Image (cartoon, rainbow over all chains, first blue to last red; front, top):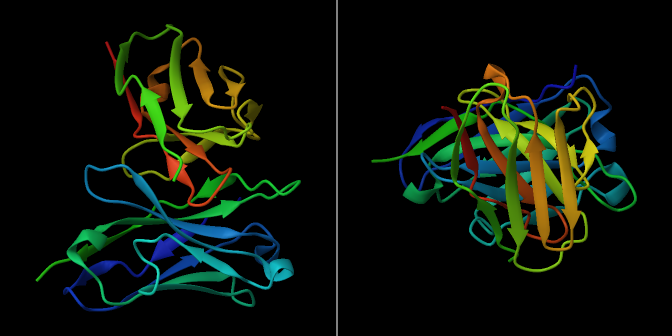
Length: 123
Length: 107
């Protein structure tokens, strides 16, 4: 069964750092693009960023709101996706989800999501 | 950024009803649209991709249509497990953007 599982959330002070992990199983991780998406309490969904697959040299994309502060990486040998979050702001408080993309013909829809991990930025 | 506008924002319906949710993109996105379902504390579940293609394992009571800027999700014969929040999402261009959600409640 394809099921991403996020971990690493918690309480952090403004200006601090946190690293989230997403463990995946049930598919060949290196073949797939993976995204991070977040949802602030009571708010809508916001795309955070993308890690492309080995074929695309693991290149990344980021939302303007996190560019320069967040870094996405992956370890294909361990089936892990990471989100390194630095210089955290109160407005980064959210549930963070990782999601698998299934790319075909140059189009990449999401197909499987994890349950998310809560990050709270507060003093 | 492409804005995705869903309507209605909430909807009350009864078991057995058929409902339709709409999603409008601020510019053309071809058929690069996903519909997914979210329940509290659960992983979001993708239902439809490429605007009208059913994800594997999703029952045929869910159907999607549309292309360009206007899209619909139809759910027929509502069952208690279908009451949730539904979102549309475009993947035509960066950044990926989402509708604000439609909360489907039991009448």
